[in-house]
Amino acid sequence: MNPADGTGPMDVDALLDDPARRVVVCCGAGGVGKTTTAAALGLRAAERGRRAVVITVDPARRLAQSMGLGSLGNTPCRVPLPEGTPGGLHAMMLDMKRTFDQVVEEHADPDRARQIMDNPFYETLSTSFSGTQEYMAMERLGQLRESGEWDLIVVDTPPSRSALDFLDAPERLGRFLDGKLMRFLTAPAGSGPLRFLGAGVGMVTSMVGKLVGAQFLNDLRSFTSAFEAVFGGFQERAERTYRLLQDPGTAFVVVAAPEPDAMREAAFFVRRLASDGMPLAGLVLNRTHPLPDGPAARLGPEEAERAAQTLAGTGEHPVAEAALRLHAARARTRGRELLLRERLLTAHPCVRVSEVAALAGDVHGLTGLRRVGDRLAGAGPSGEGPADGTG
Image 1 (cartoon, one colour):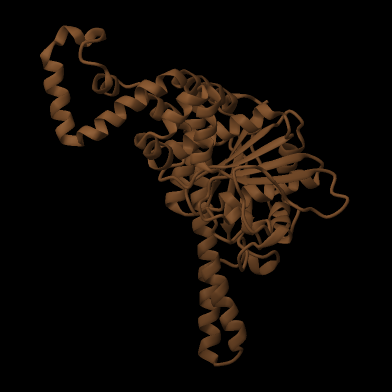
Image 2 (image 1 turned 60 degrees about the vertical axis):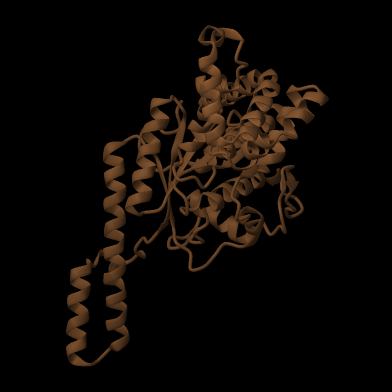
């Protein structure tokens, strides 16, 4: 059963406790709280008895900070938990270059691997080519899943321009490496189908060489010739990991802040997940401003403003006047948030929502993450949640 079937709040504890659930992917626009959400989910899963690992690709290293660790690397690091915790927690931060190197070393003999990694074009591809970070995040997820060491893997997706880059990057990188232009530029002039073009090929490659530089073209040729032997392995692994994302054992959690751009991105991602047949657990609406319980919560912003103006005219009760004005401002903010939420749920009525109120400050250490986890699961008091603004 898809966790998003039906309506109502997202049952975070049921999601984390399900033994069939092996991967949770936190996705959404940048700056909406994905990193904090992923870390809080991992900690809550560990405290409920699961062996969890959280993987982040956040270059700001916020995951390490939120877990009270000095730093994280490409190998999962154990997070110290209180004695008696039934599960365990590890965390890691993606090292894009090291992950790429490991894949090359796995699919090529030592001489060919050295030839590939010494090539200047490989250096560019493995460190700064668009889509490589997302591709390697998928690769690392596949490696962790195949190890069988973890009950649950929680993924904090890259802070990309678009959250969809995480899904599209493997195919985009594969198309580039296997593209017709790449093969045309790197094929020997007298080989394959190009032999029928004769001297024309030499003229074209000469022109290209003048544009990009002869040395660059030579590096590209050398890289493609060496990389061709391992490219099939890359493609096969990317396709396998993509199928893993569609597996019922995977769940996507879309994280959004109650802001127009973030909610549009969330709605776009919900549509994309549905079209690709990927299981959506629900939406975390982060840093909201619910009104406090009690009779005052029923007072609308206009009523509160009128009451404040009345008190101002008397010159008495300045504290009550200030409180009414604060309530009016918060009620307006809450009204905008509810409108944005309603728009998304009107378009996607089956999406379950976990709403998490804003904290007064940043989240630091396991205590802060535990509080966030409580609020994600609806187990804590209203009015607090991950307000740290981490991506």
